[in-house]
Image 1: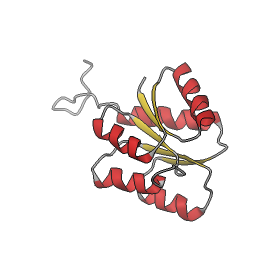
Image 2: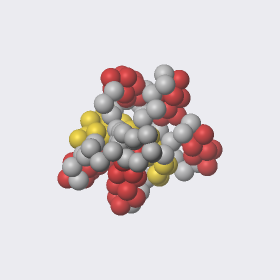
Image 3: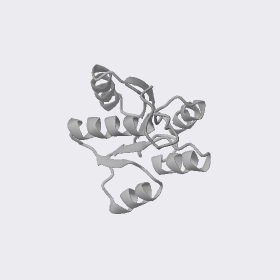
Image 4: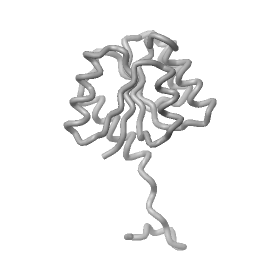
Length: 135
């Protein structure tokens, strides 16, 4: 279905998300720090990034800024304990797809991940008339 990079420093939350997404057919890579996230996203092959803001080494908003500065345009879904409207506004201004505060509803996270993966799926080729080629 797609590859998700989970950036979360809490092993219990990470385990819950990994199990749920894998059960839904997603491949999940998990890292615990911002530096690891940036390195993994530089490699490519990620369809969506689930990004916690409270990381041990780099603030998640700074990770997001670095990704955008590098031209990495993978869809980002923030999953965080921060409910400050300023953090939300900054994240949205940096182009995040969604901002979910913990505890979030599983159905909401899953819907956002599915939509983000669908968004990154390559478009079908079009012919000269603008009609999708059936393949």
